Amino acid sequence: MNAQIKDTWYYIIVQNPGTSNEKFVGYTDKETGSTFIPTFKSKEISQQCFLIMPKDIMNNKYEVQAVIKEDLIDQAKKNNYEVFLLDDKGSILNKVS
Image (tube, rainbow, N blue to C red; front, side, top):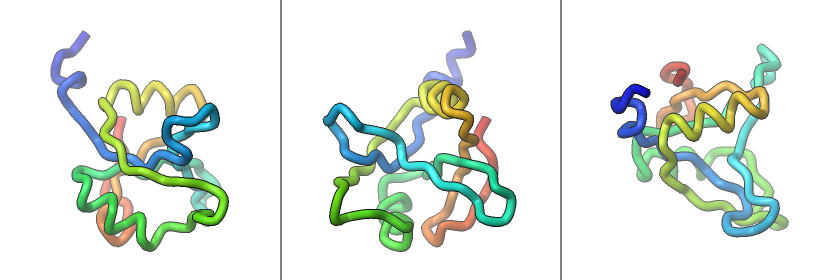
């Protein structure tokens, strides 16, 4: 096990945190059809991008949470999602793997 991976944290948006239907927020790219979890380097960047993200605030609660890279990748793979690092404007910087 590579200790370096364990120490890498990313920020994600969690839908309905602390409930039985808690889940990582994911999206489908309209051009490519690929599904992905938007990921961020800091809490501040994730909060800025969240403001412009499509969401259902009438029926769901959302929260920024830090997650270990390994756990994020594992969850994404289990659900056939990719993980992309985004900036505060929602532009993809690179794939996280």
